[in-house]
Image 1: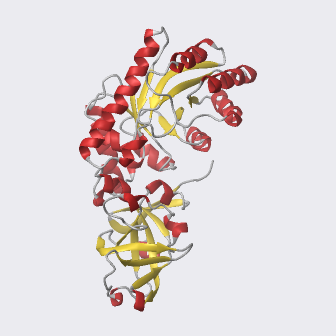
Image 2: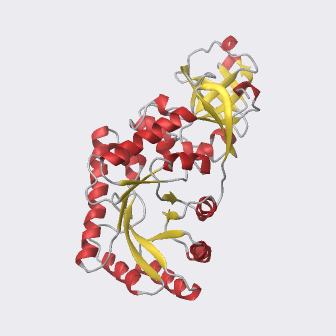
Image 3: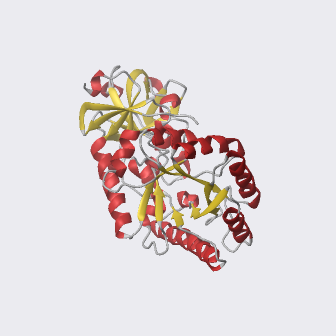
Length: 377
């Protein structure tokens, strides 16, 4: 089947670019003498994740228990659920562990540790858990030096319903860095924070087998991983315009795009109208605060090559409006009704989440496979 045979809008995944991205990150992490635990929240597809693990088998990171259930059902047992655990999810987590999943939870307070411990006793399971460390003030977790670290660690270690598995952090503020040097500094800040906390736990006589860091920007630019047992990253598989804007990748490293059809024009406004609105592209406008605002996505030809300065300037639910980013005139005759275009996404996770499957190509406009994906919680 050719790309021209697809009904639009359709999600396109370039396998060659995917494989190149996977190899680059795998080699980098190997050189840093630690291990990669891919985050699968972007891919949500066993076909993609198997490729990420085939040359470096190991565990995965998930952001929903639905992801944990799906990947466990496909033979992956080593799973870190890297979102602070909500009490109403513990029965589901316990069911996964009973089935054989080596599921590790995450929390950042004594209160949460005690809730998990009580539920573990009630359900007859022991929940291993990591303590989340706030390395950058971006989100949740406890700061290095916080006295509650040891208290949480002791609670997890001493209760029969829990086990202290280690510490982890996510330098989400790396998404706000404005230079490569800033990203390198953030990677070191991330590393130092969890290594410090791991040392504090060990000095208190507590185990800390896992010392986990991760974000695609910091994983890409980290220069050392002393004391780190694993690195988590996910969007590196596909990349997107936001990552390109950070300098983490180039436009040609973006493996994901949305195929769309031209359905009309507004000549007086220099608009090209397509059938890919925010339901196909997502509402993500993450590049709006970057040096180059990419609108709702960069417009490419059928081969995936960007066309001049065309972007998706506006979206409605099922309509995309393509225009020149500088407001200049567009030669609408180049894009008659029925023309197929490809849109590079601002945020791969958000765009992929709008679709049920990947139409897989390998540079050529031939769909060589269809890989299912899933959404939800």
